[in-house]
Image (spheres, rainbow, N blue to C red):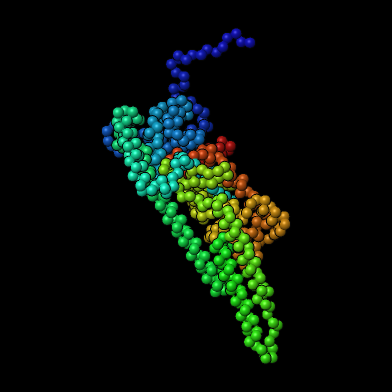
Length: 526
């Protein structure tokens, strides 16, 4: 056992080397982030955030602030206050800010002010990744994930809360709260000080504005639901008229009372056609050749089939009526913290947030992201596919690498529809159901070769998924996009900014950090 220990010299004048380049190894992520940001064209960032004249100290360099934000997101740190603390306690953050620590207000304002430039930064980093040999677009997988907003799920309010007789009192109370906050800040009780932005220029909570915005969102949702109901009723009326006139009806019959009306119209049509056939046969009495007597109305094949469809529609409508009391229609609500966020269903319950779409290449590079308010994924397929194709074309123009061309787009059953399969664009495979159903279809009814001539996009997709090559290709979907989403949510599991535009900017910032980490890892491995 040693007789003495190493001395603990806390009073020595310098704990770190004088040159900050000796504080961290050369292959550290910090140096890579700094070099990558320096190589970007940040005209948009500088134009959105640079201080142009005025009294006071010079503003912080936008490149430093962007590097600081990108590295913080690489570490999964999104809080501006936490970033400020790390600039004092963490060596990597001290290197990034060159020991000139920006306060959390500056960091938050920069993130908000540069929101329109983050999309451009994301695109430039993709070009850097392409030159580094990343972005193998032979297979591109698209999937969605729900990310929580910077809002409380308990802040959702229904129409009755926004009623006119209550709104005046609510807004008055919010105005009193904001006035009290402003007075406290004037007295020095807030974040304002000699080096802070004046109270009048700060972006406070403004609860009354958020309440008004939430009320406007609620009205928009109500109008949207009414428009959807009207469109559904018009569609049902068109299908019923077509059934009554005997015209061909495309698409699946709707469920519930709407399908019941169409099924009854089909029964009436088939009974009328069967009666007309009998009348024509009877009218040929005395003719030399009358043909075989048609079956009675109740036994006519068309009538039997239509009545079977009607029985199923009646049973379905009865089940829906019985379950209507236990499963009421979702109530219209709006959130007073982030009015543009929505209630999103997940496997673990509901979350107040946004539906984030991600397109990932086979080598785990994010080539497209978007944020939406619709909890379903189907309508996002075409825009995400177009965005991925556009990125691949730009990469191919800059590199000439054939790997930077989209081969097949993969998506799960949430995107399955005839419209998405028929959209113009690259080859695609979309699962019509769950994975176990796919595996069962491959075993029970395997297919081989290309789809038959004249097959519709739906039939061609089903045929290819039953072939060994198609099934093997589709199984790569989960291994492509699921790890990408998992690692992205380690960076941003919850939005820090409020509003759809700011959430879109923040997800592009997080995806930029994600891709820079990929490029750095690829450089270390090479």
